[in-house]
Length: 284
Image 1 (cartoon, rainbow, N blue to C red):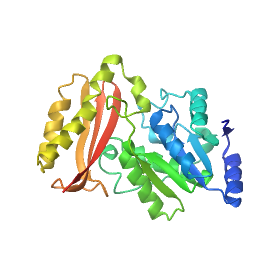
Image 2 (image 1 turned 60 degrees about the vertical axis):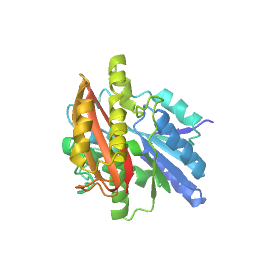
Image 3 (image 1 turned 180 degrees about the vertical axis):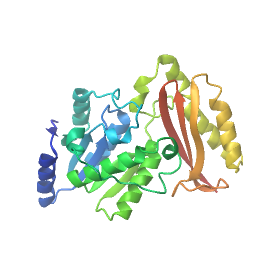
Image 4 (image 1 turned 90 degrees about the vertical axis):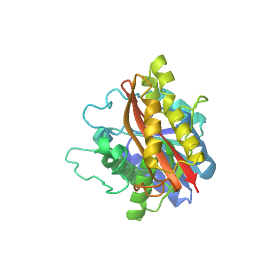
């Protein structure tokens, strides 16, 4: 199936306005490209649940802090288009930072609660950039449903909060993490890992397995859980922990006891590559 590639905001707005006028439902998957099976699973769901499926491929500069990998971020556009077409996407929106953020641009979105823990601590400008781009893309694409992967669990919660707070007429759908056969969560940044680092990165999902096992054994103290996970990860020479946290999965608030739906979230540097992962545990 051949997808239509749209390169300008004006053209994209006109296209989706016409689709809505015809009563077509629009599903949307925002991406930064470097597509993998995790992205493609979102696209297939969008295709199944909507009349028209749209993706964006836009490496958003405002979510990268100085010194992060904006310039190096993979941009295999031709391969991405091919993969998106195979997943049944109808429209591919690509644009440039210059069009999204023209000279004089000065308006940004900030969420002040669910973005504070986890990645918000060490990447303080990240969610400001993400939420601004997502709001702009929703205004451009005008989707009925937007699909996000739960590997970026905090991002999902932040976008859901923004949509609720701004009364946006769109449904945010979060979808399960897609993993390699050995358990590593799929990420566009996995390509940065050397063969040995790729093997060492498996300690991340193993630490989540450990957390689940400890909870099943009756551990309810978050500090004990974090300490045991830390011990496991620090056995890996190339690993450097950014965070290991246990929070309420509902609103990412701090918890003093492991009960209810608990998010166990980790961010770990393997060599020069920062990887995130999480698991939600339903604890009685």
